[in-house]
Image 1 (tube, rainbow, N blue to C red):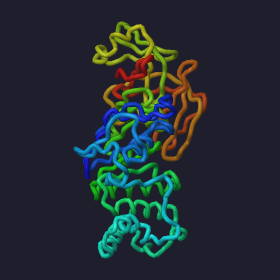
Image 2 (image 1 turned 180 degrees about the vertical axis):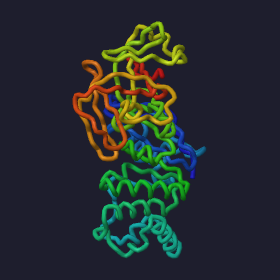
Image 3 (image 1 turned 60 degrees about the vertical axis):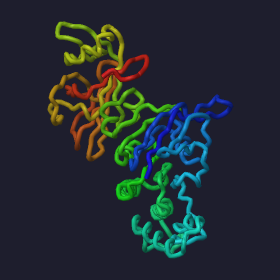
Image 4 (image 1 turned 30 degrees about the vertical axis):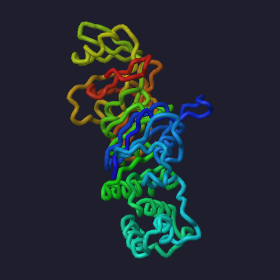
Length: 371
Protein backbone atom coordinates (compact mmCIF):
# COMPACT_ATOMS: atom_id res chain seq x y z
CA UNK A 1 0.00 0.00 0.00
CA UNK A 2 1.13 3.50 -0.75
CA UNK A 3 -0.07 7.09 -1.03
CA UNK A 4 -0.17 8.37 -4.64
CA UNK A 5 0.40 12.07 -5.23
CA UNK A 6 0.00 13.96 -8.50
CA UNK A 7 1.64 17.38 -8.71
CA UNK A 8 0.61 19.72 -11.54
CA UNK A 9 0.37 16.69 -13.84
CA UNK A 10 0.03 17.48 -17.54
CA UNK A 11 -0.27 15.60 -20.79
CA UNK A 12 -0.46 17.49 -24.09
CA UNK A 13 -0.74 16.02 -27.56
CA UNK A 14 -0.19 17.55 -31.00
CA UNK A 15 2.61 19.93 -30.01
CA UNK A 16 0.59 21.20 -27.08
CA UNK A 17 -2.61 21.89 -29.00
CA UNK A 18 -4.62 19.17 -27.25
CA UNK A 19 -4.50 19.43 -23.45
CA UNK A 20 -5.65 15.95 -22.42
CA UNK A 21 -4.62 16.53 -18.78
CA UNK A 22 -4.07 20.13 -17.79
CA UNK A 23 -2.36 20.58 -14.45
CA UNK A 24 -3.87 18.11 -11.97
CA UNK A 25 -3.05 18.20 -8.28
CA UNK A 26 -4.46 15.20 -6.43
CA UNK A 27 -3.53 12.97 -3.50
CA UNK A 28 -4.89 9.42 -3.24
CA UNK A 29 -4.56 8.28 0.35
CA UNK A 30 -2.91 5.03 1.39
CA UNK A 31 -5.53 2.27 1.06
CA UNK A 32 -8.16 4.58 -0.47
CA UNK A 33 -10.59 3.71 -3.27
CA UNK A 34 -10.64 6.81 -5.46
CA UNK A 35 -12.85 7.06 -8.54
CA UNK A 36 -11.86 9.28 -11.48
CA UNK A 37 -15.22 10.25 -12.96
CA UNK A 38 -16.01 12.18 -16.11
CA UNK A 39 -17.33 12.03 -19.68
CA UNK A 40 -15.46 10.45 -22.58
CA UNK A 41 -12.42 12.50 -23.54
CA UNK A 42 -12.12 14.30 -20.19
CA UNK A 43 -8.58 12.97 -19.52
CA UNK A 44 -9.31 10.37 -16.84
CA UNK A 45 -7.84 7.38 -18.72
CA UNK A 46 -4.80 9.43 -19.77
CA UNK A 47 -4.27 10.31 -16.09
CA UNK A 48 -4.50 6.63 -15.15
CA UNK A 49 -2.06 5.65 -17.90
CA UNK A 50 0.47 8.22 -16.64
CA UNK A 51 0.15 6.80 -13.12
CA UNK A 52 0.75 3.34 -14.62
CA UNK A 53 3.78 4.50 -16.59
CA UNK A 54 2.13 3.79 -19.96
CA UNK A 55 2.17 7.50 -20.90
CA UNK A 56 4.99 9.97 -20.25
CA UNK A 57 3.79 13.24 -18.69
CA UNK A 58 4.37 16.52 -20.50
CA UNK A 59 4.90 18.11 -17.10
CA UNK A 60 4.45 17.61 -13.39
CA UNK A 61 5.35 14.77 -11.04
CA UNK A 62 3.94 11.45 -9.84
CA UNK A 63 4.85 10.30 -6.34
CA UNK A 64 4.33 6.88 -4.76
CA UNK A 65 4.90 7.68 -1.10
CA UNK A 66 8.20 9.59 -0.95
CA UNK A 67 9.45 8.12 -4.25
CA UNK A 68 9.29 10.15 -7.50
CA UNK A 69 8.12 7.57 -10.08
CA UNK A 70 7.31 10.05 -12.88
CA UNK A 71 9.68 8.40 -15.34
CA UNK A 72 9.76 4.86 -13.94
CA UNK A 73 8.76 2.07 -16.29
CA UNK A 74 5.51 0.21 -15.40
CA UNK A 75 7.43 -2.86 -14.13
CA UNK A 76 9.31 -0.71 -11.61
CA UNK A 77 6.18 0.87 -10.06
CA UNK A 78 4.66 -2.17 -8.32
CA UNK A 79 1.26 -1.54 -9.91
CA UNK A 80 -1.39 -3.78 -11.44
CA UNK A 81 -3.94 -2.71 -14.02
CA UNK A 82 -7.35 -4.07 -15.03
CA UNK A 83 -8.56 -2.93 -18.43
CA UNK A 84 -11.96 -2.53 -20.08
CA UNK A 85 -11.21 -5.55 -22.26
CA UNK A 86 -10.62 -8.61 -20.13
CA UNK A 87 -7.16 -9.19 -21.65
CA UNK A 88 -6.96 -12.82 -20.56
CA UNK A 89 -4.81 -15.25 -22.57
CA UNK A 90 -7.17 -17.55 -24.52
CA UNK A 91 -4.63 -20.41 -24.79
CA UNK A 92 -4.00 -20.54 -21.03
CA UNK A 93 -6.13 -22.03 -18.27
CA UNK A 94 -7.51 -19.75 -15.57
CA UNK A 95 -4.75 -21.01 -13.27
CA UNK A 96 -2.01 -20.12 -15.76
CA UNK A 97 -3.59 -16.73 -16.51
CA UNK A 98 -3.50 -15.80 -12.85
CA UNK A 99 -0.02 -17.27 -12.37
CA UNK A 100 1.47 -15.54 -15.42
CA UNK A 101 2.79 -12.33 -13.74
CA UNK A 102 4.36 -14.42 -10.96
CA UNK A 103 6.06 -16.71 -13.48
CA UNK A 104 7.46 -13.68 -15.31
CA UNK A 105 8.99 -12.54 -12.02
CA UNK A 106 10.37 -16.07 -11.47
CA UNK A 107 8.64 -16.76 -8.16
CA UNK A 108 9.12 -20.30 -6.76
CA UNK A 109 6.55 -22.84 -7.95
CA UNK A 110 5.09 -23.56 -4.51
CA UNK A 111 4.73 -19.81 -3.82
CA UNK A 112 2.96 -19.33 -7.17
CA UNK A 113 0.54 -22.14 -6.36
CA UNK A 114 -0.22 -20.68 -2.95
CA UNK A 115 -0.80 -17.16 -4.29
CA UNK A 116 -2.93 -18.28 -7.26
CA UNK A 117 -5.23 -20.23 -4.96
CA UNK A 118 -5.41 -17.27 -2.58
CA UNK A 119 -6.37 -14.85 -5.40
CA UNK A 120 -8.88 -17.32 -6.86
CA UNK A 121 -10.50 -17.74 -3.45
CA UNK A 122 -10.77 -13.97 -2.99
CA UNK A 123 -12.88 -13.52 -6.17
CA UNK A 124 -14.16 -16.46 -5.81
CA UNK A 125 -13.22 -18.56 -8.86
CA UNK A 126 -11.31 -21.47 -7.33
CA UNK A 127 -13.64 -23.95 -9.08
CA UNK A 128 -12.68 -22.50 -12.49
CA UNK A 129 -8.90 -22.90 -12.35
CA UNK A 130 -8.77 -25.74 -14.90
CA UNK A 131 -10.99 -24.02 -17.46
CA UNK A 132 -10.04 -21.92 -20.48
CA UNK A 133 -11.39 -18.37 -21.07
CA UNK A 134 -13.66 -19.57 -23.90
CA UNK A 135 -15.51 -21.70 -21.34
CA UNK A 136 -16.19 -18.70 -19.08
CA UNK A 137 -18.87 -16.00 -19.00
CA UNK A 138 -17.92 -12.32 -19.30
CA UNK A 139 -18.20 -11.85 -15.56
CA UNK A 140 -15.99 -14.86 -14.88
CA UNK A 141 -13.35 -13.62 -17.33
CA UNK A 142 -13.35 -10.25 -15.59
CA UNK A 143 -12.86 -11.98 -12.25
CA UNK A 144 -9.85 -13.78 -13.73
CA UNK A 145 -8.42 -10.43 -14.85
CA UNK A 146 -8.89 -9.00 -11.35
CA UNK A 147 -7.35 -12.10 -9.74
CA UNK A 148 -4.32 -11.77 -12.02
CA UNK A 149 -4.01 -8.12 -10.96
CA UNK A 150 -4.09 -8.77 -7.21
CA UNK A 151 -1.95 -11.94 -7.18
CA UNK A 152 1.25 -9.86 -7.26
CA UNK A 153 -0.01 -7.86 -4.24
CA UNK A 154 0.56 -4.48 -5.92
CA UNK A 155 1.12 -1.22 -4.06
CA UNK A 156 -1.41 0.44 -6.39
CA UNK A 157 -4.33 -1.15 -8.25
CA UNK A 158 -5.50 0.69 -11.37
CA UNK A 159 -8.84 -0.06 -13.05
CA UNK A 160 -9.94 1.43 -16.38
CA UNK A 161 -13.71 1.02 -16.94
CA UNK A 162 -13.47 -2.68 -15.96
CA UNK A 163 -17.23 -3.30 -15.93
CA UNK A 164 -18.35 -1.50 -19.08
CA UNK A 165 -18.51 -4.70 -21.17
CA UNK A 166 -20.82 -6.47 -18.71
CA UNK A 167 -24.62 -6.45 -18.76
CA UNK A 168 -26.46 -4.25 -16.25
CA UNK A 169 -27.29 -6.98 -13.72
CA UNK A 170 -23.75 -8.35 -13.68
CA UNK A 171 -22.29 -4.85 -13.35
CA UNK A 172 -24.22 -4.37 -10.11
CA UNK A 173 -22.91 -7.67 -8.72
CA UNK A 174 -19.32 -6.98 -9.79
CA UNK A 175 -19.40 -3.46 -8.29
CA UNK A 176 -20.13 -4.99 -4.90
CA UNK A 177 -17.47 -7.71 -5.34
CA UNK A 178 -14.71 -5.29 -6.35
CA UNK A 179 -15.52 -2.91 -3.51
CA UNK A 180 -15.58 -5.72 -0.92
CA UNK A 181 -12.31 -7.09 -2.32
CA UNK A 182 -10.60 -3.69 -2.10
CA UNK A 183 -11.85 -3.25 1.47
CA UNK A 184 -10.31 -6.62 2.40
CA UNK A 185 -7.00 -5.99 0.65
CA UNK A 186 -6.76 -2.32 1.67
CA UNK A 187 -4.84 -1.66 -1.55
CA UNK A 188 -4.66 1.90 -2.88
CA UNK A 189 -7.07 1.80 -5.83
CA UNK A 190 -7.73 4.29 -8.64
CA UNK A 191 -10.81 3.42 -10.67
CA UNK A 192 -11.79 5.17 -13.91
CA UNK A 193 -15.42 5.33 -15.03
CA UNK A 194 -17.94 7.55 -16.81
CA UNK A 195 -20.76 5.86 -14.86
CA UNK A 196 -21.85 8.06 -11.97
CA UNK A 197 -23.69 5.17 -10.27
CA UNK A 198 -20.43 3.18 -10.13
CA UNK A 199 -18.66 6.23 -8.74
CA UNK A 200 -21.28 6.88 -6.06
CA UNK A 201 -21.51 3.27 -4.88
CA UNK A 202 -17.82 2.32 -4.98
CA UNK A 203 -15.62 5.31 -4.24
CA UNK A 204 -14.37 6.49 -0.87
CA UNK A 205 -13.91 9.75 -2.76
CA UNK A 206 -14.82 10.88 -6.27
CA UNK A 207 -12.60 13.10 -8.43
CA UNK A 208 -14.71 14.70 -11.17
CA UNK A 209 -12.87 15.66 -14.36
CA UNK A 210 -13.83 17.55 -17.50
CA UNK A 211 -11.72 18.85 -20.40
CA UNK A 212 -8.47 17.82 -18.72
CA UNK A 213 -9.25 19.68 -15.50
CA UNK A 214 -9.99 18.37 -12.03
CA UNK A 215 -13.23 20.08 -10.97
CA UNK A 216 -14.11 18.65 -7.57
CA UNK A 217 -12.85 15.98 -5.19
CA UNK A 218 -14.76 14.67 -2.20
CA UNK A 219 -16.83 11.87 -0.68
CA UNK A 220 -19.75 10.79 -2.93
CA UNK A 221 -22.42 12.36 -0.72
CA UNK A 222 -20.58 15.68 -0.55
CA UNK A 223 -20.07 15.86 -4.32
CA UNK A 224 -23.73 14.97 -4.85
CA UNK A 225 -25.26 17.36 -2.32
CA UNK A 226 -22.77 20.22 -2.68
CA UNK A 227 -21.55 20.36 -6.30
CA UNK A 228 -19.14 23.24 -6.84
CA UNK A 229 -20.22 23.91 -10.44
CA UNK A 230 -23.04 23.41 -12.92
CA UNK A 231 -21.06 20.66 -14.65
CA UNK A 232 -20.63 18.60 -11.47
CA UNK A 233 -24.25 19.22 -10.46
CA UNK A 234 -25.65 17.99 -13.76
CA UNK A 235 -23.16 15.19 -14.42
CA UNK A 236 -23.94 13.44 -11.14
CA UNK A 237 -27.55 12.46 -10.48
CA UNK A 238 -30.29 10.81 -12.52
CA UNK A 239 -32.44 12.45 -13.68
CA UNK A 240 -30.02 15.33 -13.77
CA UNK A 241 -30.41 18.53 -11.79
CA UNK A 242 -33.03 21.01 -13.02
CA UNK A 243 -31.54 24.36 -14.04
CA UNK A 244 -33.52 27.57 -14.50
CA UNK A 245 -32.33 31.09 -15.25
CA UNK A 246 -33.73 33.49 -12.67
CA UNK A 247 -33.04 36.92 -11.16
CA UNK A 248 -32.42 37.78 -7.53
CA UNK A 249 -34.71 40.56 -6.37
CA UNK A 250 -34.99 42.53 -3.13
CA UNK A 251 -38.60 42.58 -1.92
CA UNK A 252 -40.46 43.40 1.30
CA UNK A 253 -40.18 39.82 2.54
CA UNK A 254 -36.48 39.55 1.69
CA UNK A 255 -34.46 38.18 -1.23
CA UNK A 256 -36.50 36.41 -3.89
CA UNK A 257 -35.63 34.17 -6.82
CA UNK A 258 -37.79 35.46 -9.65
CA UNK A 259 -38.32 33.88 -13.05
CA UNK A 260 -41.04 33.15 -15.54
CA UNK A 261 -43.87 31.64 -13.48
CA UNK A 262 -41.54 31.29 -10.52
CA UNK A 263 -41.04 33.20 -7.27
CA UNK A 264 -39.21 31.72 -4.29
CA UNK A 265 -38.46 33.69 -1.12
CA UNK A 266 -35.01 32.75 0.17
CA UNK A 267 -33.85 32.23 3.77
CA UNK A 268 -32.27 35.34 5.29
CA UNK A 269 -28.95 33.57 5.91
CA UNK A 270 -28.40 33.40 2.13
CA UNK A 271 -28.20 37.20 1.96
CA UNK A 272 -24.46 37.56 2.59
CA UNK A 273 -23.62 35.14 -0.25
CA UNK A 274 -26.13 36.67 -2.67
CA UNK A 275 -25.77 40.40 -1.93
CA UNK A 276 -23.69 41.07 -5.04
CA UNK A 277 -26.18 39.24 -7.25
CA UNK A 278 -29.20 41.40 -6.43
CA UNK A 279 -30.92 42.48 -9.68
CA UNK A 280 -28.70 40.10 -11.64
CA UNK A 281 -29.37 36.82 -13.42
CA UNK A 282 -28.21 33.57 -11.82
CA UNK A 283 -28.82 29.87 -12.45
CA UNK A 284 -31.16 28.18 -9.98
CA UNK A 285 -30.61 24.43 -9.55
CA UNK A 286 -32.76 21.83 -7.80
CA UNK A 287 -32.54 18.05 -8.01
CA UNK A 288 -35.73 16.17 -9.01
CA UNK A 289 -35.78 14.23 -5.73
CA UNK A 290 -35.63 17.45 -3.69
CA UNK A 291 -39.12 18.41 -4.84
CA UNK A 292 -42.53 16.83 -4.49
CA UNK A 293 -46.13 17.55 -5.45
CA UNK A 294 -48.55 18.69 -2.76
CA UNK A 295 -51.24 16.16 -1.97
CA UNK A 296 -49.46 13.37 -3.86
CA UNK A 297 -46.26 12.70 -1.96
CA UNK A 298 -44.23 14.21 0.88
CA UNK A 299 -40.59 15.12 1.39
CA UNK A 300 -39.27 13.56 4.58
CA UNK A 301 -37.21 15.55 7.11
CA UNK A 302 -37.76 18.84 5.24
CA UNK A 303 -37.40 21.83 7.57
CA UNK A 304 -38.07 24.64 5.10
CA UNK A 305 -40.05 24.52 1.88
CA UNK A 306 -41.61 26.82 -0.71
CA UNK A 307 -44.34 26.17 -3.26
CA UNK A 308 -44.42 26.99 -6.95
CA UNK A 309 -47.20 26.29 -9.44
CA UNK A 310 -46.84 24.04 -12.44
CA UNK A 311 -48.69 22.01 -15.06
CA UNK A 312 -48.08 18.30 -15.66
CA UNK A 313 -46.58 17.93 -19.14
CA UNK A 314 -45.45 14.28 -19.23
CA UNK A 315 -45.12 11.31 -16.87
CA UNK A 316 -42.48 8.56 -16.82
CA UNK A 317 -43.80 5.63 -14.81
CA UNK A 318 -40.74 3.59 -13.82
CA UNK A 319 -42.40 1.27 -11.29
CA UNK A 320 -40.36 2.06 -8.19
CA UNK A 321 -40.33 5.77 -9.11
CA UNK A 322 -42.34 8.20 -11.19
CA UNK A 323 -40.69 11.11 -13.01
CA UNK A 324 -43.15 13.96 -13.48
CA UNK A 325 -42.25 16.53 -16.14
CA UNK A 326 -43.95 19.78 -15.17
CA UNK A 327 -44.11 23.10 -16.98
CA UNK A 328 -43.42 26.15 -14.81
CA UNK A 329 -44.30 29.40 -16.53
CA UNK A 330 -44.03 29.43 -20.32
CA UNK A 331 -40.61 28.06 -21.15
CA UNK A 332 -39.42 26.18 -18.09
CA UNK A 333 -39.75 22.40 -17.96
CA UNK A 334 -38.64 20.68 -14.76
CA UNK A 335 -38.52 17.08 -13.58
CA UNK A 336 -39.81 15.89 -10.20
CA UNK A 337 -38.87 12.43 -8.93
CA UNK A 338 -41.55 10.80 -6.79
CA UNK A 339 -41.53 7.36 -5.15
CA UNK A 340 -43.89 4.65 -6.43
CA UNK A 341 -46.71 4.91 -8.94
CA UNK A 342 -48.26 8.38 -9.02
CA UNK A 343 -51.70 8.81 -10.64
CA UNK A 344 -51.60 12.24 -12.27
CA UNK A 345 -53.27 13.49 -15.43
CA UNK A 346 -51.45 15.31 -18.23
CA UNK A 347 -52.42 18.98 -18.14
CA UNK A 348 -53.42 19.01 -14.47
CA UNK A 349 -52.36 21.97 -12.32
CA UNK A 350 -50.10 21.08 -9.38
CA UNK A 351 -48.32 22.76 -6.50
CA UNK A 352 -44.65 21.82 -6.49
CA UNK A 353 -42.97 21.80 -3.08
CA UNK A 354 -39.27 22.80 -3.14
CA UNK A 355 -36.86 21.83 -0.34
CA UNK A 356 -35.08 25.12 0.43
CA UNK A 357 -32.18 23.38 2.16
CA UNK A 358 -31.27 21.58 -1.06
CA UNK A 359 -31.39 24.37 -3.61
CA UNK A 360 -28.32 25.46 -5.59
CA UNK A 361 -27.48 28.85 -7.06
CA UNK A 362 -24.72 29.18 -9.65
CA UNK A 363 -22.97 32.21 -11.09
CA UNK A 364 -24.26 32.58 -14.66
CA UNK A 365 -20.86 33.58 -16.05
CA UNK A 366 -18.42 31.28 -14.24
CA UNK A 367 -20.98 28.49 -13.65
CA UNK A 368 -19.45 28.04 -10.18
CA UNK A 369 -21.66 27.45 -7.15
CA UNK A 370 -22.64 30.41 -5.00
CA UNK A 371 -24.91 28.34 -2.75
